[in-house]
Image (cartoon, rainbow, N blue to C red; front, side, top):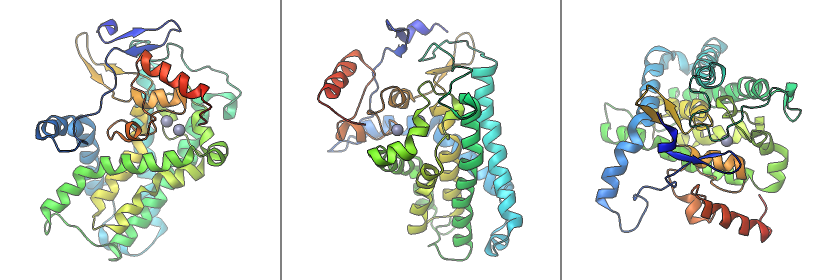
Length: 328
Ligand SMILES: [Zn+2]
Ligand SMILES: [Zn+2]
């Protein structure tokens, strides 16, 4: 794989994709059928499908039965915690091992050519990876599990309007389809709130220490940010839904940040093929702080004036915004 076919290195040694970040022609008025038809496969493959299938596997093999969930007990709470911990360590650790320990593709397609510093006093334990692992496992996974456990218990006891595949297959499938999009919208709202200066300084700053992020940076957040970030479960308390939707949102929120923070544009899979990681928008958020609060599927940043498409022109526009005194 020749990375120069896909991007260029700027004067500061940062690699950027040649193609600007673009939004699909879906969130436009009037609706464009062709745009929607082109967008669906990109939205579903591979990550939407991967996390939906993972949720199905987890529901079938790694979640206690509804009867058991009805009675609150530490036995099954601990099992769910260990399952989430195991999945998180295996998948996030897998990304980290491949790209940062084994350095399987070197700095090919890496936005920031430098590797994270071994010693950096801004982080706990003076080390980015150790700090990131600590916040992810000591706070992220327990808070994710807490939201999930309460959601499953509420569902099992009939406190949430039930949406089942047997009785409402279309509604069930439609909601499953929209789970990633609902997650992104919720993430944008919470993230935007966390950039309000008092909240930023106290809570969100911790995540932004990761200027040169790696997979473990994804869920490296202050516990208060974890509480807000995983509050997307609340949406499924208010609308008819099922455990599969809840597991799906938990897995997307708990594990997918790893691939969004790899710091790479692509994973090289062979001499001639690679897998695109469409998260340059979020990398730019870590680099510039005040752009791209959403993940790049819904054009919220475009609508609210914080979009950076990765081009030198957008760099200029940002400089101008900064000279006008824009705060993060
Ligand atoms: Zn981030
Ligand atoms: Zn942020």
